[in-house]
Image (tube, rainbow, N blue to C red; front, side, top):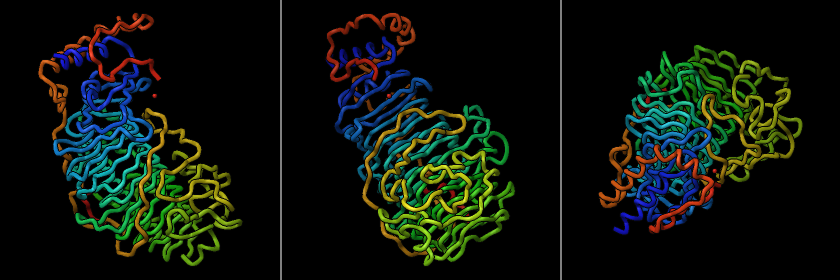
Length: 551
């Protein structure tokens, strides 16, 4: 009865108030999470959380998201178990998950963060989290979305040693990932992809997905592979798939800029189809092409590739297919035997040099993380002004890898400057942008302030091998991870007596009727019945070929 009274007290207390900051710990967080409302911040105490974090039916707003956060040092640790994915999100929106360590404990098929099934999850922010222990197989994923999702922000996370780092969308193209921002993450040492966004067939009816054209932005990330084998097939560091042929979503695009792509012993560093802008990135060390744009599951539509620095590859840029809506290949700095292959049309103002030329052009060319530096030496990597007007609609088209304005656009490659590099040292760490990006995706505003994350160990050394484009079918990411999707009607893994659950549900149902009372009483003194609340205490608020479904 004491447990019943405590839980009923927590539910009644949380229901009968406005936005609040609430504390919880491993003993009671599962009872607190379902009662969170718009504007709440749940602060999780340090400790090991052996249950799952089920986020079901939580609805924040753009102005008042629901924040679930651990300490900044990542000491709130959620551990995987054989039952279910560790964090499962169902029918929720405007929720921020922040500063957690999510440890899959080496369990095969147990995903870190997941949404799946016929539900709607939009405007979810995953920020400042560390993902470890998800490397039991290539099919095990740190962050997975397999339901219609839009407005997600995935920011400043460290994913180390997963089977697949991020797998966004479903293997059959049926669950689109739309209008997202993936920024300032470190994804390293994965067995398969560092990240893949799946191709999209015609969108499901009535899903709520934004019907006006949007961009998914991938910026300021560090994508690193090592030399470990990929038993289910070799994969690029990043692959992005095409969009629906007609209807909603058919005019969407990817904007990929400011990223470091490092090392792939058997494949390209980046492969893209659909409609894509790739600019102001640094690509280092792959045996084939650094960038491959081609028809894949769906066709290549448009390819804008400009102001990239590419070093230590066989071919800088490979067009496996023509781009019927146009291409734009300008102002790239490529140290490779071959600048370009394939049917590109608008190719101009690039600087193509051999590997041996690099020491006379850039500061410290190498394939060693922590010491390599491709910033131009004085008077180098420059030419006549490049007309960037055709790409002026791209986000940050006019600033370089360091966010330095390009001015007259006379530099070739990812840096618009010469001499000493004022920006971030290329390394296996979170990229320090300096000035935080001011632009989110085209129709969404992600919630959550920037925060630090922890970093893992360095990646493997440069390797040989063969590759440079998609090859072979695969089944990476075809499953949904562990367990079943949660529902509002089926609270999962509370481990509580049935009577306690009923008491909590009844308290939650009173919430609507009590909101008016809570607003009126906000200036009054709070009276709390003498129940045992643990640490749930009210405080004042404080913020080439086809890879089908492959990982």
